[in-house]
Image: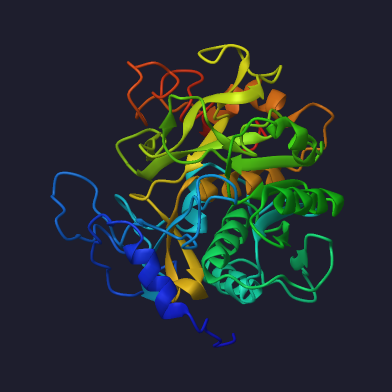
Length: 421
C-alpha cells in the first residue's frame, strides 16, 4: 500500500479534534494485529463498572471542512475519531466497542458472504479522495473481504460527468468517501463500489453526481451529505428519483420540531436513514442492545409532500423523517480506515447508517417496480422494531421517541436480514 499522506494531515486532525468541544476521549486498548483479534471489557477513562465500556475513543468530532454551513453548500454530518494508527482497533466480544464489518453483519443478520454478486453501490461526495482505493483495500483486507483486483474489479472512481479526471482534493470530505465505501462494503462485500465525486458541495453538482451514479446502473446510491430544506427545493426532486435505483440518505442531526429537514433525505423518493446506538448484550434474545441515538434526526419536512407509502401521522400531508435506521451513535462507532485520520479510527453519524443501508439494498439486489419505500413499510417482519431511546423533547410522541411500530428516530426499524429491502 502506498505511504502517501496529505500534506495538511496535521491540520485536518487538529481540526477534527477542536471544531467542537469533544466528549471525553477514552483510552485505547492495546493494538491488535487484525480486526479479528478480540479484547474483552476494555476499561475507559472515567467509565464505571456498572455498564458497557468503550474499547476505543468514541467518534466525537465533526469530520467537516472549516467552511461547512447549514445552508447553501452541503453540510457535513459525519463524526470521526483517531487512535488506531496502522493497526485496526481491537474487536470486543462484550459491551461497547468499535464495530467491525463482521459485527454489523451479525447484528443485522445479513447473508453477506453469499449475496450481492452483480450488484453495485454508489457513494456520492464532493471533491476528490486520491487515497479512496487504497483505504478501501486496507479495510477489506482487515475484515477478511476479497480484494478489488483484476479478478474482482470491485472499485471504480469517476467525476460527476462520468470521466476519470478528478475534482480538487479535500482531506475532510475524503473521510466521508472512505466511510461511505467501507460501510457499504461491510454490508455487501460482493457488491461493486462506485465513488462519484462532485465538483463542489453545491446541491446542483451533487444532484448531477447522483444522476451519474444512477446512469452507471447502481443498485443503490448514498449521498454522504445534506443540504437544508428551502422554498423551491422540489424543482430538483427528479434528480433523486431513479427507480429501480434506490437513493438512500442520512437523516441528519437532532430532532427538528420546526419542520426543517435536510435534502435529499426529505424528498419522497429517497429512503431516509436514522441512527441508533448498538452494542453486544448477551442478556437479550438477539444478543445485541439497540436504541434510538440521541443525536439522530427526525421530524416533518417543511416543503416535501408525504409519499403515498408512508402512513399519515404527526406530519399530516408532509414527509416524515426517517424511514429506517442503523447504527450511527458516537458511543458505539464503527471502525474505518482513512489517511486523513492517520490510519485506523472510528466514525459515527447518520451517514454511517445510510452507507450501511445502501449496502443492504445492494445485498438484497431487488429489481422491482414497487418503490423501495413501499416495500420497506410493508415488510416490518424483517426489521428490528426499536422501542427505546429518544432524540428530543416531544412529550413522548413518536415523532422523536422510539415506540412500537413507526417512529421518527428509527423509522420502521433496523435490518433483520434483507427481506425488507
